[in-house]
Length: 298
Ligand SMILES: [Zn+2]
Image 1 (tube, rainbow, N blue to C red):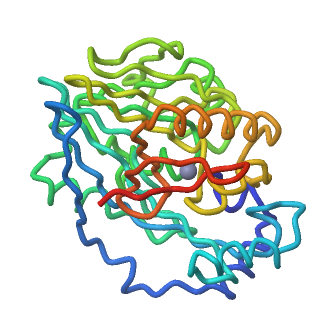
Image 2 (image 1 turned 180 degrees about the vertical axis):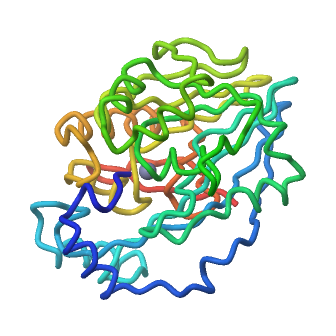
């Protein structure tokens, strides 16, 4: 997902904030963990928070009448004036490796987030135990937890694993200068398709951003597909994969990638981990008419 200020001018963002206030108490850092297995591996969905945006035609279903989006949300029993996105990085213990997948939004003022450190503690894991951080892409709701409030590395011993194309894209943005300076000594790049651990293979999902990647995690014949931001919303993105979402840098490539991923996942019964679907973001998709439907697991 893209940072709010990239989607709309700052003035409009402030307006959204006025329209959709967030309560400070909701932002209090409470850990929330969902533990599960991938074959022999221990895995943890770690709640970081959520992001709420208006259903006004600028975020989801761009170019569609908001009433059409509202009707779809209503059918799912969801509020129709806003769109909510959960935010839950994944952590997997793979042998001696402790691998974190994305880092949440940190203390961003455009999200109710920053719970990742508390969720990590609730899972019994110290930040210094994390050996590897897989970053699906360079948006701030995935990079935001890399640095602490003092601008220091939040995971001091972790190698930060980024697709080479995405690292190049992150570095060219002036707003990322401080982040880039802080993490450069820890970054190791890969080409999509390469493994970052024996059980973890990176997957090219370019479209949402130029170097956007997912990861396939395999153990004892069980698989989990971490899809990054190939799909953002469990109803809209899955049931209407061809609708434009403002967060996709390349809207056409994002749609093609999303439909292809969902098609393949539905055909093969793939177990999916979706970082923005309702917590814990685990489930699979089934064909429904000319699109798909999300079947949550919990
Ligand atoms: Zn995102």
